[in-house]
Every structure is written in structure tokens, then in C-alpha cells.
Amino acid sequence: MRYIITTFLSVFTFFGLVAQELSVNVTINTPKLQIADPATFESLKGSLEEFFQNTKWTDDYYEQEERIDVTINITITDEISIRDFKADLAIQATRPIYGSDQTSVLFTHQDKEFYFSYEQFQPIQYTPNSFNDNLTATLAFYAYIILGLDADSFSTFGGENHFITAQEIMNLVPPNVSRSAKGWLSVDGRRNRYWLIENLLTPRVQPLRQAWYDYHRLGIDQMHSDPAVARVLMIKALEQIAGVDKNYPNSMIIQVFANTKGVEVLQIFKPAPVEEKNKVADIMSTIDPSNAIRYRMLRS
Image (cartoon, rainbow, N blue to C red; front, top):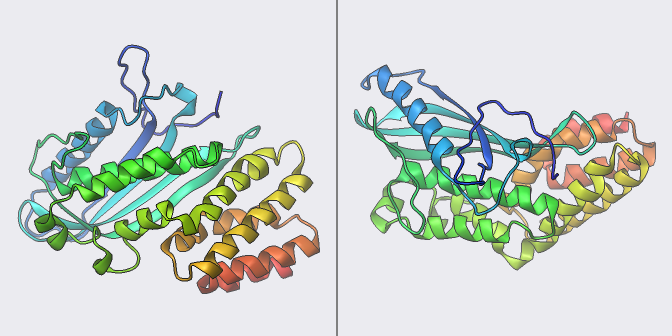
């Protein structure tokens, strides 16, 4: 058994003995609608739920308790037309901590360049090795990012194939789409889908991916049995990540790590010895300088 997970929306379809990988909860916010019919977004929510229910992302078999818990929050920020929209896409994925009833966040990310087209009752379907539309491509891209991060947390570089699939999804986006629907190109900024997958696959970030495994399997998953040893190994993992930050400055993956793990690191090291707390405060303040004040509480 890999781990136990609590589900929000039970997302599973059986193909023989194959069970689904993701348990997904979708919410859609429409604070400033002026053109589109609100019923369109009720339909979109249903279509997205069916999309995740009916898509088998891998060839692996997942027990029900092994599924990855994902929340997706879509906030419509611009109505380009009655069927074309820009939105903020907020995603969080979690996995349980072994031997406890607590969870560890795998991925926390906000994509503010989520452009998509949708008409009421439009089906959404992912087809491997082809591009259907930007809505499907973006959601499939992040599904494989999450699958990759989850796999990396259980085995060293275990998520490689999932990350490669995410990169292939990006490469299949037609030029006319990627030019208008931002987020797929390197020129669109330094914090987008292009740079996320570039960071995850570049050799410069391999030490972070090794540290990701160490942090989870050797550290946080062992907190129930030997918290002192687990914390030492987690500090070593954080030092590796700081090394990546030094060798690959301003990389997106460091920001993603800080956004995902900053609060968790604080919670884990609050009861730690002073020397450990000071060391962690130094590391986290270096890799997450915009939140340096947050880590000061470890020094008190």
C-alpha cells in the first residue's frame, strides 16, 4: 500500500481492474459576469468533473486509498466573448503523511494566464498525442505535473515519464494558440507552464528532485517513528534545495517549492531544538526571501 488518502470527489472509472489516479474537487467562481450565461459555468463544472472521472492518466493501478487529492479553483477574470474566457487557475494537490492522519501538500500553484473556450454542454476529452483545445491541454498538463510530483515523492525520479508527458502536451499546442493563450512560451514570462516543466526536466534541478524524495520518504513519512532523525534528513534535503537555488537563481521551481512547503516546514520545525530551528530559518529565508518574516518565528 502506497498511502491512505481522503477524497473530496471520488473520481474513478474501472477499465477491467484499472482504477483512477486522481480524486478531484472543482469549484468555479464568476464574480464579474456581464456577458456569459451563469448556466454555462454550471455546465463547465459538470464537464470538468466528467473529464476527470473518465480520463485514465497512466497505466498504473491505484487503490482507492492511493488516489491523489486535488482541488481546482477557477475564477473567471475576463469575458473575452460569450464563449472565450480568461481565468485564474488555482490548484492544490495533497498526499497523506505515512503513519498519521495528516496530509502533506504536493503542489500549490496559481496560473493567472488560463485562457479557454467553452460552450454549454461541451464535452471535454483528453486524447494522448493530440491537441484538442487549450482548456483540455492546460488541465492535462497540470494533471501530469501532479502525477510526477507524487511519483517523485515515492521513488527517486519516479515522476520522469509524467513530466515528459506534460512537456509533450505543451509541445503539441499549435503556434497560433500559444501566441494568444499565454503561458506556453518562454517569452510569456518566467513563471508559467513553459518554465515549470523546463525546471522539472533540466539537469540543473535534479538535486531538488532527489531532495524532494528525501524530504518526503526519508523525512516527513518517518516523523511518526523517529522525528529527530526525520528532521535531520529533512534539513539535508532543504540544504540541497538551497544549493539548486544558488546554482539556478530565480528558477520557478524554487518558488513553487516555497509556496507549497513553506507553512509545512514551519509547523514541522516549531518543536525542534533551537539549533535546527535557526538552521531551517536561514535556509528558508534564503530560498523564500519574500516571506522571510514568516520564518522569524522559528527563532523566537
